[in-house]
Image (cartoon, rainbow, N blue to C red; front, side, top):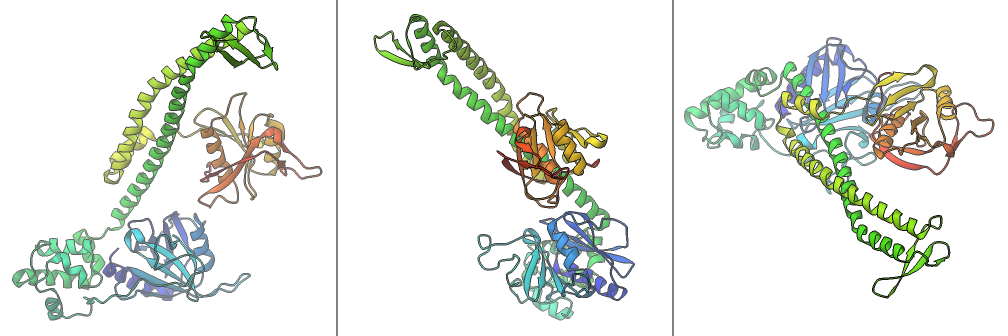
Length: 520
């Protein structure tokens, strides 16, 4: 968002400060709403690379429950009255100053600094000059000059010197722009960026490479003064700034883009695992020759002596000796038959894997192509991607006192406990010894059970259930949550413990993004 437009939004915010403020509301993980004055609200968009601000009429959109750790910090720390809404020059930065609050846990005054700088945008809470929370941490490996993370002193973006078009006279603007092409205007005028420059060219009929002089200069300065007088109104009329409807369309398209990207990346991960499995199966075919050779020797030496119960020394066809491992429960001819059968299975599996690999490789190439094209897709194309690639949502069925029952995409039944009593019933009534049990690590939350039904549980299903375990725990607002899983036979209740309290052993851990189900 360009500086001149930010200044206009903040001017509208300042007129509403005397009317007080409402509670923070959140539309999604990247959109916060601050009601002001009882008649309007400031919308803060933080989705990169298009962060921005908008002033809108009062609405009932959004929810008070924070969706991210930074939104939790915003609610907790920036709860006082809004004292100021300022902007350094016409930089793409906005400062909102909040008074402290008194209560059971008092909060000192805090400043919310909105750096609306494209792909490097950020939201930062600062107390007494130090960063106490930020939406995006910037460490030394990213920026050696300016770091942003809790605990460091906040350093503003470096200052610069440009002409403020709001304070310049017509002659001052003419003097500053004479001889320049419009594409270089942003280097001398503050608050003007590429989109506003393009709009000024369209409005004045001057091309971006044309030298500003004579009639072209007059027309360009006239359009510039009209923009400075009413930045948002004029920019919206010229199409250089999105109105409410357009912004909503962009948010909808951004949401579709993110959803399509997630679906494609999940499919890509699955295809990469299938590729690995197929290549591993094909590589195992290399042992077929050895298996058949050993089987031939076992048939040729049916009376050889078995040593140590597990090995036999056989005379090879070239006269040398060869030690072969055998199953002591079987005769040597039966061991030979077992090797022939194993070699035949490996050959069949390898052939099937080669056939499957062709299709997987082709599909993987198509998925990579779509991922590369996503940024240029319109809303309809994104919908088409989702209709083809978004996995069918698992069925969810509440099961009364038994907990929440979910069927994963592979058909396994997954149970989620919603309270201590359901946790207890899932773990000690429904579970069988070889079912997979899991729980978010180190926090209170649901017992989650995968009913294996005597089958091997694929890792996809473990990740699916682990996401539910994280989403139904007190860590559900974190971006990544460690989840422990083990077989039910390694879970027990300590003597005298209340319902839902367990100990477990031989666990493994996965890190997953929390997911929830609306029925929970």
